[in-house]
Each structure stands twice: as C-alpha cells, then as structure tokens.
Length: 226
Image 1 (cartoon, one colour):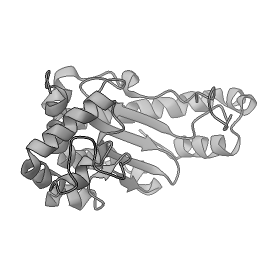
Image 2 (cartoon, helix red, strand yellow):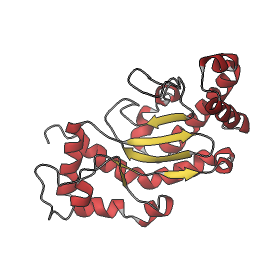
Image 3 (cartoon, helix red, strand yellow):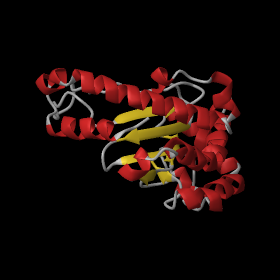
Image 4 (cartoon, one colour):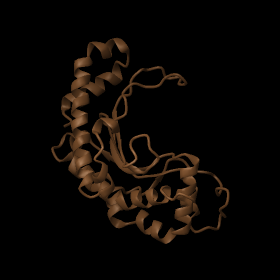
C-alpha cells in the first residue's frame, strides 16, 4: 500500500526530475512502484465487488498502470518523468475506448474517480446520442444524491464546445451535457487519506456511486450501429 516513503520519493522526484537523480534512486523508485502496484490491486478488488464488468475480467494491475516515463518528443517540457503514479481500470483495458475508474497518487495532489476522458470522435458521438435519447435517465444518474455526496462538483467535462455540436440545437434540454467532450468525476484526497489503511475501500465506495454513469456510457459505446 501507499506509505510515507512512496510520497517522499515522488516529492523528491518532482524536485530532481532528471535521469541522474532517478538512476541513483532507482531502488527507491522500485519500492514506490511496488507500493502503488499493491494499491491498484486492492483498488481493482474493491471495484470488482460491485462492478460485474470488472469482476469478469479482473485486470492485471500492471496493465492498468501508466508508465512513469514522459513522452517528451512533442513537448516543450523536457523533464523525463511524471511526478505521480496513475492507473486506469476498465473492462476494455487501459488503452481501450470504454469508460472506467482511475486513481492518481501524488503528494498533495492525489485524486480519483470515474468516467470517460476525451474519447475519440466516434465514441463521443455515441455517448452524445445516448444522452440525447435517454436524457431523463442520464440526468437522474448525473445528479444522483449519492454521486454528489462523493463528488460535489458532479459530472465534469474533459473539454467542451462553445456551440451546440453538429446535429443538435441550442434549445435541446440536454445541450449542457451534449457540449461535453468527455464525462468524468473527480475527488481530491489528502496525503493523510491516501496513507490511511482503508484508502482503497473509501475510494471504491466513491467509485460505486459512479458505476451507473460508467455503465450508461459503456452501453452507448458498445452499440454497433449508432
């Protein structure tokens, strides 16, 4: 599980984001990575306790965890390493198109939640069609009291269009959501919460409130002929 040593390593990496320091501290990185692996394994078990789609595949934690190495080829920021650990869990895998659940651990900036972040255009088109066609169902999911209790900001957009997307009118009752380019929830966690023994259980309980949204989005994505 996450320990103070995990957070200390990440904090020092942020202050020394270069290959020389990283290689000199590789044993510390490996221990921190192992701690995060164990945390993700526990997170997956928590998700599988209520989401049958996750229980069906029981993904390998390694397949859910993003690499710590940054792709700097097209970035002005040439620092070689990410300063936090990130994992994404869904039935379709970390690189698949399906909605799922996520966890980011970084000193003072840890967060988690679920949803669908910046999907490809065909996937986004399907989710918009589903929201338009079943808006009352979507609205009841997005404004459910249990979801808002864990995620007070509600369902957030990955990004949004300024005008109504092609094929929709500004007068559409669902237009606020139809402008979204993705749908996700986010809850911040303090370092003390991350270090607590019941962290993944608490995160799992929050993600349980997102499961109806994840299921709605994935049902839309899985339609073969939108």
